[in-house]
Image (spheres, one colour):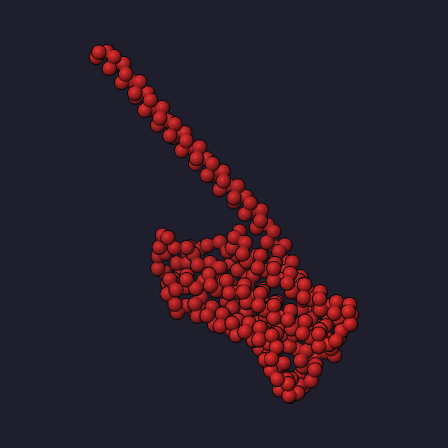
Length: 288
């Protein structure tokens, strides 16, 4: 009996060793699969990142085309530009709003994707400055149209376009001021800033969509009041302008929402941005 028991002991030990080897082999295989998936994901993201310059260049071509077509539309078909309370002063309004609330605003949104590896502080300043320029140009456009309406005795804020445009401008101003307070000259706590960041990014894209939507209603309103015949050259131009505005907003929104185009986190900058406090283990860098 003792001999039989002694014979079984090596067999049990052998089974234990085999089981341990199987676990180690399974763990190694799982680790290999994870590494393979990570490597494949990194390769896909790197391949997508190579397309970023193409998307950005496309957005700039579309944006400049929108500005040029608006300039040609008001300059060639409606008598040019002036600042004398005439129709030519009204023409300043659509040009300024396209430049400010659409083109420059969209470029300000893109800076975190274009300058992915630059100093975060520098990118923040550039972001704020571009949007400040957009704000100033938009104010000029608003003053132009209100001045013309007041001098001509027209009522203000009566159309859907005027309501949408004014709402977009007010929200843009609020968004800019909140961005200054939360991020460029931060007075809020780190927790509050992390809570507000996704809202800031989300409403940034919403405002771009609202700006384009307001532009489309304004273009349609102007074309209707002009009494254009079907397929008149001016009508074709306004339709093309409208499509280009939509395409510009779509490309900007696509670039901003693609995960691989996001600015890579920099722990040193994050630590500085919270006044050298150590980041908690479960916190994520507050990078747009």
